[in-house]
Each structure stands twice: as structure tokens, then as C-alpha cells.
Length: 211
Image (cartoon, rainbow, N blue to C red; front, side, top):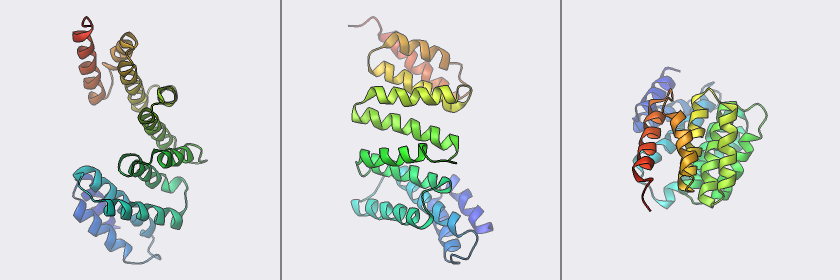
């Protein structure tokens, strides 16, 4: 337990080598170890975070990581305790292996899963919205963003969904509607969302009169 907690702390601090070594130490104690499943899931999560952070990889490394995810999902099943790994696998497919269809299927499975946390379902809907933009289907995107906005109206997740919808309106040329949403988001409890909303709003105002 102490090594596992130390590994989690290392992961939070982006100390990936230490985190991976720690999780492997726990795994090597065998399947009878009560921390075994959590360590297995955390290990592939750490490898995914390392990939995203360092952004240096080979096709072989991507294929190995994909197989790691598939192996643990086969071993532990697709259930509420493995939704984090499922979501990571969807990101691997969408942004690194360039298979949006597989990414979308996984997220739809999370959203439909009985017992899955509402937060992970909402974040899956936000990702789905992003993936449908990549596919060129803006109507599906705004549908998913709007669902999260409605379900988490007074939560940071709702504000994140509202900001993505505002950006989508900006990209599609509906500047007035984007401005209306950004005006509300300027008062966001999240400093990051508030600053992004102010920046985009000012950019629109500065260029509104141009051809």
C-alpha cells in the first residue's frame, strides 16, 4: 500500500519512471495481492500519461500500449472500475492510432454502462463531442456538449461543456451566440475557463468589424 501510494504521488508530479517502477513492484507481488488490480490499471494509466506528456513514441510503442489496455480489459472486464482505462484507450485510438470509430464505440459503451460514475460519463460525452468535430459532424458535437451543460449546470463540467459549445459556435461563424456564452463564462469559478473565455471574447470583438 505504501509503495502504491508513493507511485500515485509520483504520477501526480509527472515522475513517470518512479511511478511505473512502483506499480510494477506491487504487481510483482502476484494476483493474490489486494492491490494487484489497482496497480495493473494504474500502470497502463501511467504509461498513457507519460505518452501524452512527453509526446515521443514509435508505432511499435503505440501498438504495445494498445495491447496492454486490451489485456487488462479482458482480464478485469469492462465495468465501472475499469472505465478510466477504457477512456484512456479511446484517447489512444482517437489521437495516436487514428481510429475514431473505435474510440467512439468505447465512449458510447461507457455512457450506456449501468453503475458508471456520472462524472466519467460526462467526460466521455465531452470527448465524444470532440471526436465528432474531427469527423465533421458538428450537430452531434453540440448535442453532447449541451447534454453535459444541462446535467452539470452548476458544476465545472457544465462550464467546460458550455465553453466548448461557445468555441464551436465561433468556429462555425455564429459570433453573436458565441459572445453571449463567453460573456457568462467570464465569471466562471474556474480561472482557466474564465481566462480562455475572456481571451476568445476579446479576439472576436477586436476582429468583428473586419471582412
